[in-house]
Length: 119
Image (cartoon, rainbow, N blue to C red; front, side, top):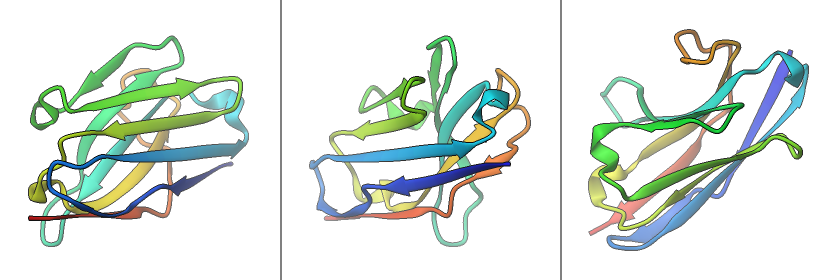
């Protein structure tokens, strides 16, 4: 089992920045890729960004260069730096971990952290 604990959510004005962090513990040797998803009320949960254990990253189109994902394999953490935030970025952000490189299957989820962007 792997436990994921997120931190760093909160309320920010449009144009501001937030940094989300996720700490993994447990059977972390099984994890290949980690990433962030988000879910707004009444909407599906969407991938925001993901990064492999080799450092390859990919982003959703809506990120449009505003966010940066990073991973510290020594500390078993993954972070998401979010800049130029927009009200439509408001959602619960979930840390995710997968035993696959492509995150085709999400094996573990964090509890989620709320991000609210005011206009």
